[in-house]
Length: 416
Ligand SMILES: CSCC[C@H](NC(N)=O)C(=O)O
Ligand SMILES: [Mn+2]
Image (cartoon, rainbow, N blue to C red; front, side, top):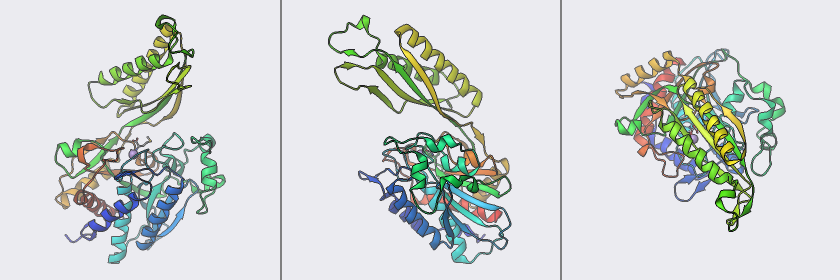
């Protein structure tokens, strides 16, 4: 069946992924592009040029989302939207997010170059600040697009003390956070949201499949735990007299690992990615220690029970060690299920293309989680080597990315 999927240019996709990765390059194969930075601006200009080449008009909404739109025969019809992100984690890889934006542009470019008529408008979105690397809460652009961003979200500060509001206000491209309400999309405005993304886990490689179809996305809870004891001289204070928040943190972090490892389903994961000590002297018992916790599960009840267990452990360890503590919630996102109808449509597209794509769960979070609140949502996964992600070693091969884009194209064809 000669469908749009045959027009996907795998070399053009792969070259664009590698070209984009040169912006914010770290070492040989790493990338670091935090939201609303100079690197992000350079990347947005490059991606905008590809969107225009694909026949789209391009603009930024007031949440900093980069949007390309190709009109159909009836502009009043709801949008067929494809999206992901181009911002990264610190010292990240080259494929996380970019594969979905570049793959989406490729689908529209194939339609444009083939002169394929379609009724619905198509939009490709590079969502702002998906990773939350700069302002410590993620999925900002997609949360904003569905109207779930508060004024406080604009006041979050980066390490230099710059607020997200100031970063948006000064980024250019006509965006203005004072008018963010104008950029909110309502239920009914979008017919379907599709996101293609590297799996960022080992499942597809383990089962030797190039592509997967997502049926559910685990929900992340992000916490900031602060422990306070008493600073002292590393050489003179006997161990029995110390109120050391670092050893308290070590005991708590080990208990977090035990709680997560104790989950027999294997879907509960907990990560302490950042830990800082004040004042941070090698011969000073710290006065305070701050660490982050990223706790996820596909089952909301199980995740919240684990959170309660962890908070009880924090209380117990701090009582025993005479430490003060504060647990702050940075973000809590519920797990979501993908639209059954879209999952079936993606499965049918894979079958029609003779691609054996298993249905699976996503441990990583995605912009699709929030888009599911206002429209039917589906996700396509692309195999990545060793399941490695959030790491300069991240890699997906051009054939697998092309297969994922073909499934995306075949499915988009059914909706436009
Ligand atoms: C929950 S906000 C951060 C989203 C990020 N997403 C990906 N795909 O890496 C993650 O899963 O860590
Ligand atoms: Mn990521």
